[in-house]
Image 1 (cartoon, rainbow, N blue to C red):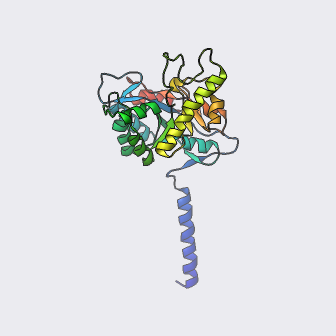
Image 2: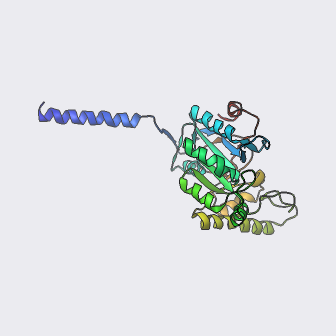
Image 3: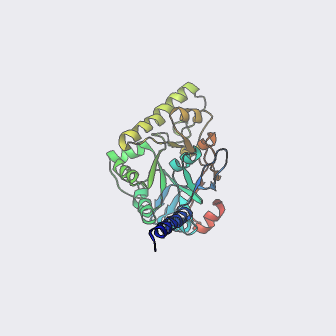
Length: 286
């Protein structure tokens, strides 16, 4: 073979290889297009995870059932995403998998570290963990590692955040309560002035932002409403604090779209005990 033909043959091989790589389907992402909607998907909401069966219920799922959920999603071709990925997509600077799903865990129970985190590592999946600052402070200062009721400490949160599998978000510092204070979560109280509410909200939620920055070196981009409670004043205050999105408890799907106020009212499906993975996901997944 002459030098000229060798050169032509080499160029031909290179072109074929480039075409093959470009068309290879692994990790195919859907990119945001100006003014167009993206994939519709489900955000799943978990709370406590337990090894036994005595405490299972609406907000407590057995660890074996959680693993079955993860396996089902894997088998059906779903890929887990974080809030940062959704925000980037909505702002036109990132992509999403063709079949996205988001796994969120509220409150910051230590069962997440004991049961959920090992499963995320095992299956290489991601999760969004929204922690209550006062809970984490309490169990950091007074360690009590009982997975039936304990909450995470800052060392555990720091380790998981550094793994790249767990995205930490803001669930208030100490507004995760109802009844005793007359306030439902972080919503305005009956008879409370907007000025007083603004001061209380910014002190608590803004203080939690500072806590996350001090402990983890991160600024949460998403706020998770305790009990899903919000009011008309909530979104303007979240914007003032620099949040890009917020998670509610409304059970409805999410359609990725160009960035807008819809990002502050993202729906989620609560995952209760008593249903198989197939029965639960067939109703909530698009």
